[in-house]
Image 1 (cartoon, rainbow, N blue to C red):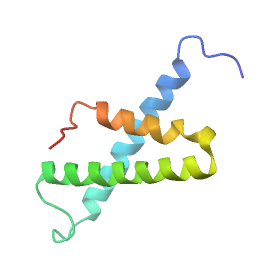
Image 2: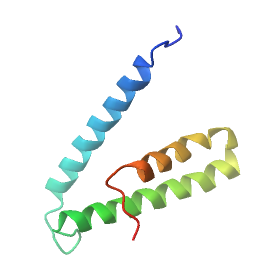
Image 3: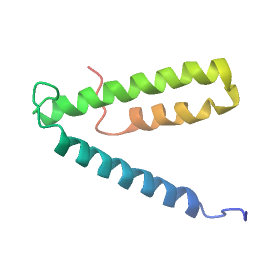
Length: 91
């Protein structure tokens, strides 16, 4: 594979990840019709989703440290991306 001198591949993969995430979340929101299971307030729903995503990433860090330390960068990058988003607010 040729070296990606201008970061085109990384940028394209980032755009794909963002579109795939948005499509998944839109479909999930449409499917979650029982408000007892999911908050109707968009801010509360975003906060809950962020909590679950951080929990998952922290579990992945523990797993990678135990079994594949060379892959640790994958969940770390995910956590850094989540925490650096302007919509992330610590309470």
